[in-house]
Image (cartoon, rainbow, N blue to C red; front, side, top):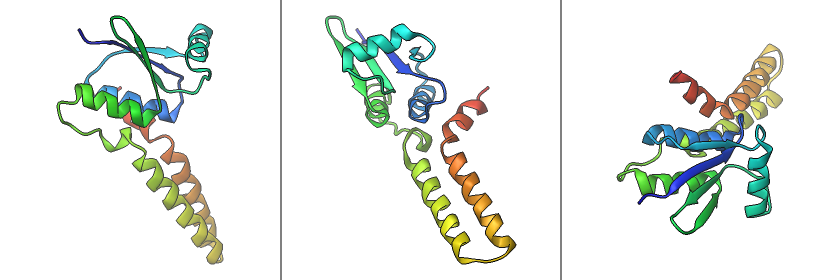
Length: 145
């Protein structure tokens, strides 16, 4: 018998979005427990782990319960158990956010070097890239709506 899964999360959490993208990609539907909307979920999380950091995957086996924190570990677990050898999409990993942060930094540093109106364009581009890198997962979920 497969264990029952539930995801402790909250809306707007970029790390939670990584897990949700993996769930969507795998076609898995599990219970989502929003710790901000339902205080009892936050309480259960603190009682189990001593903290309320999300995402956390609760894995209920027949006789035991396992708590798996950290989005990368959760995504890895989901693909090992349900992926049939597939790899997670890039948006379920930290790669796009890392690339986005690096690009934003480069644009910012270039803005410090140049003069005139190009500086404003580069600063605006840096801010936009930095903001978008944290919302890539949200854009991914919206594409299916």
